[in-house]
Image (cartoon, rainbow, N blue to C red; front, top):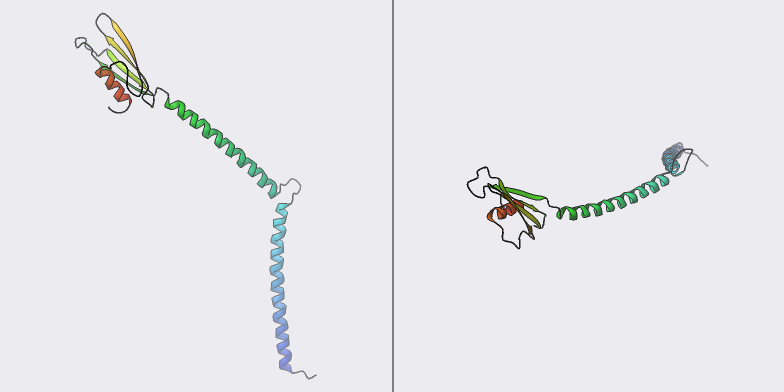
Amino acid sequence: MTSDPQSALIVALVGIVVGVVGVVLAALAFTRLGKLHRSYALLQAGEGRETIVDVMGRTMEEFADLRDEVLRLEAALAATRRDLAMALRHVSVVRYDAFGDMGGRFSFSAALLDDGGDGLVITSIHARSETRTYLKGLSRGDSDITLSPEELQAVRIARGIES
């Protein structure tokens, strides 16, 4: 076999290229293998270490507990809102001089209502020799007993209709 120097050079260059490609592929494989080893180490429990599976399991349990707590709090909030709607929290007081000669506006009508307009009106009429107090129940802002103009004004203010 005759060996041509040019053929030998081509074979040598091809060998070098194949060798360089092999080294590059080996380096890439070694790098990926290192990443796989680190990932696998996270999955294995070591001395005093938790695995990622343990952490994920604990996290899922905590999320389930938090979801249950949120549901419980939502139910408690709904109950509180229902109770608050029935609380007598809309209040107004109208003071006036019932007889025009007393001065000082000692008479008053006070309306105490819940969100639905249910509640009561307390009226105190002050005269020179006596004071009388009246109580009238309200349902949806209305009373079975006729309300005086001052009582109606107190109810409208408590309901936010008038200021």
